[in-house]
Image 1 (cartoon, helix red, strand yellow):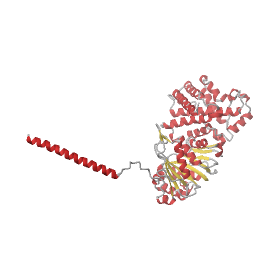
Image 2 (image 1 turned 60 degrees about the vertical axis):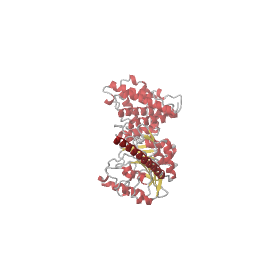
Image 3 (image 1 turned 120 degrees about the horizontal axis):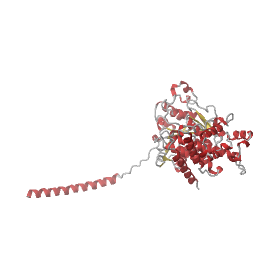
Image 4 (image 1 turned 30 degrees about the vertical axis):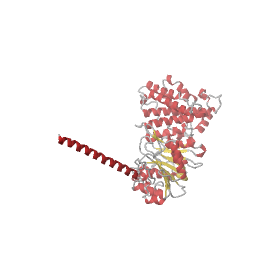
Length: 518
C-alpha cells in the first residue's frame, strides 16, 4: 500500500468513527475525543516500543503490572517523560472496552495516572493536563453511564482499527497525518471549530522554508502564537533533526489549543526534552524573555486582535516595543506580534510572519513601526499571497520576512497572488508554487510582474509603504489592440453602413413613389 493509499484509508476510517459517534456528540467535541484517543494509542505504543527495545521476545502489553520494578518505572519517566503500566496500555483497554461497565471512569483514572507519573520530574510541565479536554464523564457523551461507555468504546474500537503499519516505519507520520486531517477538516468547516488555530500545511511549509533558508543549523525554532503547533512541526518535517539543535518552542493563549500543541509534539515523536510549549498571553506575559534568542521564528498570529496596548503605560518601556517609540494600536495588535518576534530573533536568524495586509499601508502608529523596521534594515521580504488560502478567511494575507543579518539595504517584494490551485473550499499552494517563491527569495532577482528588490530611498520616499502592489507592477492581461488595424476596420464598417443607408433610402424612395402613383 502506497503512502497516499494509507493516508486515504486512514481518513476513511476516521470518518467511519465520526459517523458512528458524532450524531450525539458535537463535531468540535468529537474531534477532541478522537484526537485524545489517537494520542493515547500513540503514547501507549511509543512507550511499549521503548520498554521492549527491539527485543521480539518481550511483549510489554502481556506483562503483569507487578513485574515492573520502581527502578524500571523511574528510568522510563526520566527518558520518556511519563509511565504507562501494561494494564493501562491502549491495546489492553480497547480490547475490553465493549464489555467494561466502568470504561469511562477507568479511562479517567488511567489518564490521571499517566499525567501524575511525571510529578516531580523535569517532564511534569510538558505532561500535565494533556488529557484535560478528554472528559470521559461529560454529559456530552450521553446522559447515562451506559451511553457514555458505548460512545467511548466506539471511538476506542475505531482508533484501534486504524492501520499505522510498523511502529518504526511510517507510524509516526501517519499519526501526525491523522491529527492534521482532523484539525484541518474541522477548521475548514469553521463554526466554533477553531479555524483561527490552524495554518494549512502548504502555507506552513512555505513559512518554515523561509525562516530556515540557507541556515545549516539553528539553535531552536519558536512560534509566539503557536496554535496546534503545525508551523513548528513543518520545520521538523522538512529539515533534518540535527539542524534544529535545541528543539521547538512556543506559546499559546487558548488552553485547549495549548494541549493540542503538546499532543502534536508527541504525535510527531518530539520527546518532552526537545520542546517547550507554554500557556499564556504572549504580548502581556511572554515566557521566553530571558532565553537565548532564536535563530528561526515562524508565526501566524491572530489577525487584528485587541490588546491592552497604551492602556498599560509600562509597555512602552518594554524591551520588545520601546525601540519603535510607539505601541501598536489597541484595536490591532498585529505590529505588536511583529515587534515581539523581532525582539526574540538572533543576529543570524530569520522570522517569517503571516500578516494582515492593512499593517503595510495604514498610517499612524503602524507607519511609525514600519519606519523603525525599514530604517534599521530588518525587513528582508514582503510576500503577497493568493486569497482564500486560510481557513476562516478569504483575505489575501502577506508574509513578512524579518532578518537581522541583511547584506544590503534593499527590501524585496514578491507578488505571489497568482500562485495557487483552486479547490472546493480553499485555494492551495502547490510544491511548484513554493519552489517558485523560494527561488526568487533566494536570488533576490527582479522579475517583471512578480518580484522587485527596492532601494531604501524609494521605500522611505513612499512614506514607508510596504504594500507589494506599490512596487510590483501587475501584469496587464488586457488584449493588445492594433490601432491602425482597428481604424481600417472602422473605415470599412463606416463605408458598409453608408452603402446600406443609401440602399435603404433607395428602397424607401421607391416605396413612396409607388404609393403616390397609386
